Amino acid sequence: FSLRGVFSRENSDTENLVNEENFWFMRNISEQIPNALWVNHPSLEELANCKLSQLKRAKEIGLDIPETILTNTKENVKELYQKNDIIVFKPLFNSGQLSGNQSALYTSIVTKEKFERMGEISRCPGFFQEYIPKLYDMRLIIIGQEAFPIGIYSQDSEESKIDWRKGNPNRLKYCIKEVPDELIDKSHELCKKFGIVAAAIDFAVDKEGKHYFLDFNPSG
View 1 (tube, one colour):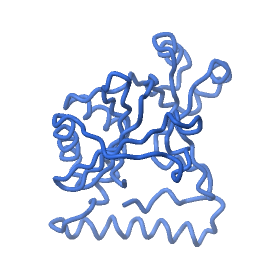
View 2: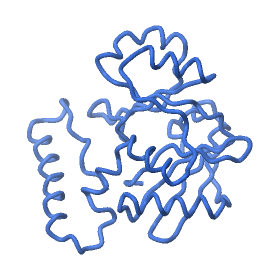
View 3: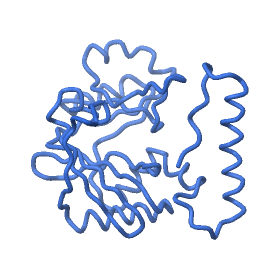
View 4: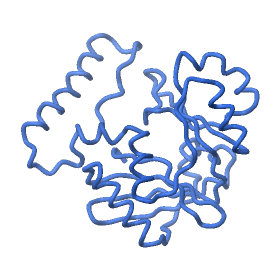
């Protein structure tokens, strides 16, 4: 679970204080009972939300990942742009929260127009990736030793093609998929590296059936 990420200037000072105190209450309590079964341990879950650590560990265990840069230099983005037909921008923090109304910043294509307007990147580093053309998305749910691979047919709708979360959940099609045992084993290994009991791991599946690791979501 995640209790943080609800701080907002639109909240009252009291609401923000309550949210912060609840977060730190859980952090303090969790450190006092280390032998309890946490799903997941709050401090480990916070560490597991680091996207660069996710990619590093995914690559270490042999998962395929898109070419990625974290930079505040436009020239670096240009190099990635020149090597790939399409690149995307992603928020570093999972919630992508922009304001107190829970607005979200989704994965988006970096068009030439957006690239030309990227003058302010020096003020805020950006997380950019090679875009993987998808046949469908897959979310692999890990709960202990169990694994549930769910295919998400994001390419059936324009609004969900780049980021399936933008699609209407009631219109998206889902189904249980068969995946290689090796992918299941590596996903369990990734959870163990973070000390996580339950997670939702997102993959992009291309037309050749290759699975590209995208995100590790310890909060599900």
